[in-house]
Length: 553
Ligand SMILES: [Zn+2]
Image (cartoon, rainbow, N blue to C red; front, top):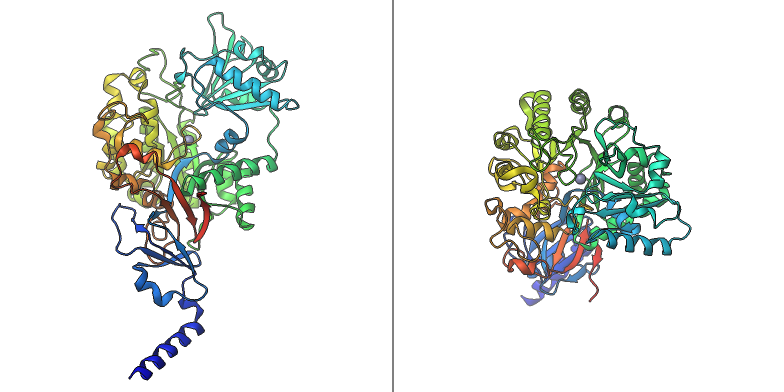
């Protein structure tokens, strides 16, 4: 009897050894396995072959697919989630922040001046000075700064510093002179040149007026831009992100992505939205790039801007700003252009993702989408990016029409100190309202809008379940009716970005056949006290079965 059993076992092993593909390439063991909705899957192990999940279960059940060459990765009790995705950020902007003058977190103009001084000392040969990340709302005097604050520091070198939201540019007198901006210069369409009481330009340019200065700056070389992109993507991997949606990649960026993808150098997945230039011609010339075969780069969406941002009062509102009664913000795209671009997108198979912050901008985009897509709006999965300030009657339209509301939970907790002043008590109730939009039946993928906010997905998760800042303020959360539960919050950063990318059948959950993208953390996000979420460590980031980041022990 024993001999027969032994023979069967040996025969079995022989057959399995002959057939290598039966064995998994890797098995991650000793973990707690948590799916997109926060439910714990039974078993402590996940087996991976090539870039796919083959099985989730107990280690003991995976023995038959564990061969000689199978690599065992011990998770030592860590928590394995589907790979986290950020549905809206700006890759190159983050890279620039990482490698250029970084003004994130500055608390005063003096603070900016000090960082600028240090940067100039470190870069004596640099002529064109670029920086980003300032936010006057974080300063003791929250008025916009002036070119004179910068004029003393750079001895005739042009300086251009982008506001944290990318919707305002603060420049010195040299840069104004190079751009030929004077008292007489009119505002360009969709932009504003801020001027003082005497009519002189202050050195702050809003939205489309920023181009007047940027046109003067020599463009970054593709080599430099490659450095920005890679620095950012590596950074995202270290934050546990396995994919990002790049909300605006011009043709040069797209061609860099393609090169990196072909060379196998993209550390994480990129869902790139094409932006800028002659976008109609772009869509006609280039077929969408999409595959279900371990996609590291997908190009099947275009990015448009309908208005500016709330922080720089460029968001397009029905009624004037409550703290600026003459101003309703800026519509940055004529309706006729939006129509024409959207028609072409429908005809060429591109998804449209339009930035809309103000209530008026949001309604315009909803109307155009509805008009152009007709009956089957939902199947096109068109998106509104931010969907930040909504008229109450527009909130249920997202769900009804199947228009994706791509929202960023940390905008709420960053903007809450001043949002009510901008919008007034009544209008603010329809702002930063993911729960209302969700309850209306809409798909609400989560993002960070980095570099406007930190790209850390744990901050987004924390913000949407607490509506508090990192110090736990205000108690009970800001507009607490907008709090989402943890299960929905996890979906926001896993399966919903996958849906928004048309990849929910291969990505965003832990199922056999799905991509082996894992975010592995040292804490259980479903049960840990909220304040400890921000002390969570990324243990490992796995993309397509490959470990792309590992915490140093
Ligand atoms: Zn953005």
